[in-house]
Length: 214
Image (tube, rainbow, N blue to C red; front, side, top):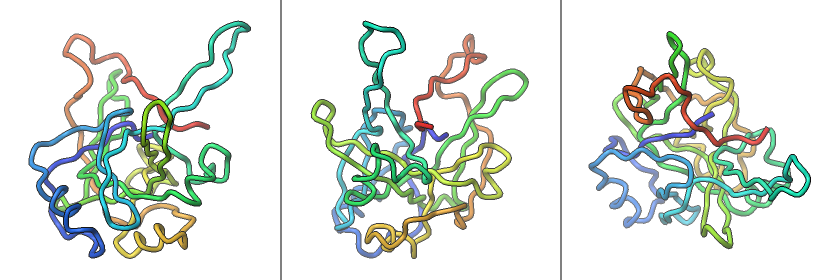
């Protein structure tokens, strides 16, 4: 599951219906910033405007032991095959968005250590990821990233991938006409990246992850 993505200086065009202010803001990105669960990040709404939201829907689950308090989880990824469930149904029907990213990360185990792989488009072009959003009384406006079946690049690494949209798919998704995603046809490539979560003395521990609700 994707629990980290990156914002940075990206190349390529932006969808034509983005508001000029939104284009200016994401195009002005110069310093690379890694987005993790609960952090704020820019999200594009159907009217072409940009809004900053926190990554992850917040949900309370019943405690395992009687008398304990509910357990809160941050749901950063929403599986395509679960979008009809009560957690996502309303947002998928009424509150769609897409998430600009310059890259995203997946984790693999190599030589007993968890290491991140950085996925990006050739040439450093923008990646557009399907998402949904909601308003939380305590945490404000929050978004969740839709995930789908992996394409041939992601399949050796993970059984899910972010729903990366091609330029022609974006308006169809935002208008409610695209409801199934499948493996993305957008060309991606990857390489191993530095472990940005751990110190040199603690790299063998798995990275903390709050993600998809199965």
